Length: 288
Length: 342
Image (cartoon, chains in turn green, red):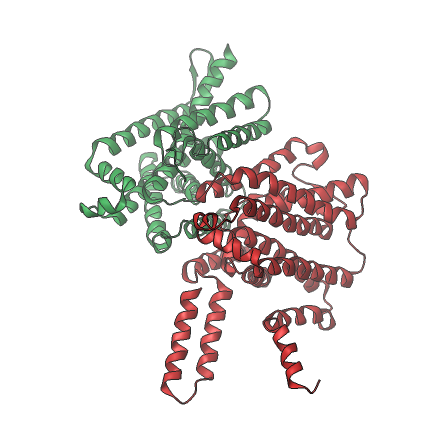
């Protein structure tokens, strides 16, 4: 019983982090057709910024958090404007330049902070007991709450605001949207900003529990792909569903078997689904 | 051989081989001038990487099946050679072809499901597929050596000079074979698939067959080079299966010029030597290196070799410019044409 509850709680936290990461990736792909391989680099930069601001510079947490998230968002805008925009016609070139940037950022972080793990000061240092049985860091619960709030906020933003509608219009038909006066290039910048901010939030909130490392972008990138492709590239609902599947699978296999196997099981599920249904679980049935 | 007709016939036979000879000649003569084992080892590494890059280019540059998981094939070749040699003492003459064979089978296994996938999906799937063997080596760490890998694999030969010439032979045979493939009708078909798959299918080409065959061939060459690499390093480890290696291969090939085979080979030599040369500023070496690659991708999107070729042609046209003003216009036009063709 205890194990079941633990799986329930930890799985929710894991899924929430994956959902936050994958939604941003999915959004920029769905709207701009950009496969941003530097997406989890924003996650890493979010973690390092929060480390620098709160643990090194001792800036108060709320201010540091805002700076880290908006800083990463602005970096996202810069990446979109200077690196992706000139190459946006070819999806391959975009993949190449973003992965090159991801490598570059890794080396940058390595030469600034060195290869060692950095411990990040927790936002709340308490431990909580959930359902009377499961002990968990309050930090993880905070991550879960923030993730759920942000996902709801994102849903509201896309479905209920004018900007959100413009974003969806560009996603559905770029030419059509341009005809009615939507500046697609500007929309891409907005979406990249949101996407980078989401990744930075995930990075900043997860950093106190896992630390900040120069290689921390690699594993989440593979998971992020698995989630996004499983859910169907471009489908937001599918992404959330897939994040739940991947997050819970990982936690269940880690708890019952071993964490080495969890990687393999996830990849196995992923390959099977993809071979049976290449467009993903909730993807539009069409050639990608 | 005084008959000009015969000489012309001979030269027309070798036409187009000049640049290859210019490249290969110095490569063969290097040991005469440089005895430093360090430089020789570096050049061996260049030769092996050239095969990695060319085999990636055959798959992605020529057929347009974008692969972000080339370390899958390299690692398969390396681990096949490593495990066979480490546990069963199989000599390199057997392990290297077997490494290629295993990687080719993996190429076949990945190529068939890949038929259903296009564009970014395929890229992401190859990315993730290459993570599977890395997870397997962690699970079977008792046999694979886990993170450390297996040490003490038999060297190819004791003589460094012979090892160098073996690596040159690897380069010539593998890259020569791939160049022959892309220059043949087979290569034309691959290009047609890359440019418009529907149209090539409509003209009666079995595109699925060609795509799977390319996956297998590319895997084969990468596996051979991977096995060679294992015997060269006397070690196999997870770095041969890593994401970083796959990404490095993509970046180097693109920097050199995708879809040319020669471009990635050129970039392999250039970037590996640049990487070594930068060792005097060890701390920032990889930062500068990756920064340079980013700049190349942004500002020379066609790749180094095709751009260099176009510039060279333009320069040649300018030097040869005859007195008539039209010819000068021709030179400028050929520059434009060369630039637009790339």
